[in-house]
Image 1: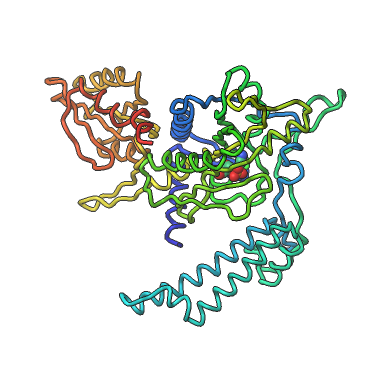
Image 2: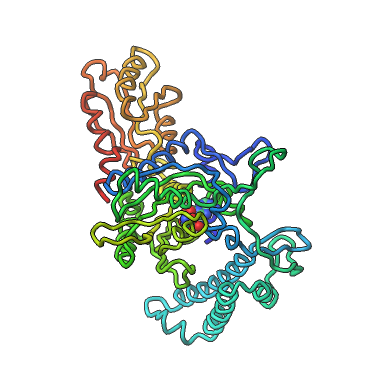
Length: 513
Ligand code: GAP
């Protein structure tokens, strides 16, 4: 675990050093849980968004996109339930003056018990070797049995308190389990209070009577309130979907793990409107299809798992998360929810407008049911970055850091390098750049030794380096170096475009889904 934490720290440092992610407002000492994407980060992020957008809208003829405003009528958030129920339970420590999410403190405590159990198991596995029977050990070892029972008891109390919205119950678990503040080390806790995660601001001048508006905490509501517009103007027939990519804002109490939990982040959401009664079939379809989208990237099939929700929100009749193995454990990257007709019905009620679909096949009107797929761009970015990062020891005691990014997502697709800065090689290299730049993000690199230039490109995940040498002037061939294998081959300049395109095109990636 500690080793994984070290790797994660290195990834965060690498992301900054190579222009992927910077802390926001850094020269003013930063702004907690807000980040900026740098010159390479924005390219990678845009490629992720393009992969999602094209997968949803090009590959599905019944899905169209929109781009709704961040500000919306405040009643929307009343109708959606966010004003009343988009809360986290928070608790303060009186000594450190720090604020925590009560549920996260308890979850972390449960994770610590799990770690103790795993440690006992690892010790026993080492002692017994081949003959070790883990299931038997879990049932019979006194210490493990005791820890498991304790874990179960805490978990049950926790689930009950969360389900019942029992804030005193949460506090009592923190007291009974003697959970201490990680900073002050004390148990001097305040009461637990509900904290709404939406950011508020004022719209209009105060003289006119200003109105409180919210920064949207999800993009989905912009889709719901445009359902009628899109259905009518696009003459969409059910089943159909509306996709949107955009910023969302949540005043997270505990912002942790770099860009995993931010206060300003980006979502890629799609609402799929279906006939009531067919939602389970579509839920299954989207659950499988979205996992295929992830797996096509080739980051490793074993790094994904589903987490089906046992406890469902009152409006949902099925929900699952796609989790990805981050250096800090399996974590939610995407949620797929069957949301019934809750949102559209609520907007119908609060707006007083009829939001129905006339189904010509059934000759009947109804409020469509909705399957939602919702993925965080930044979490997706983090999963790509973490699974691509590798520190490699090379022959001769050399080492390199390489990002094995999926080629279609790489910020720079190829770098063209003259071997030396004379004899007409830079000019020849520029000619190649001027040809490739129309289709691929291409870097021209002439500074430092060729080895150093390769390392710099490896560190940002460039799939191809093209070296121009004296032979190039004679026969119009170059050396093409592959990032992952570091193998090099001599290829004709005339073949470069086709070769690179076959590896980096989004089209090829989309065909893998
Ligand atoms: N419309 C449904 C919805 O917003 P959610 O599970 O709250 O559902 C969906 O969020 C996705 O948005 C998550 O799976 C995650 O990838 C991303 N997300 C949510 N909160 C985030 C945060 N504070 N920072 C970064 N990404 C976040």
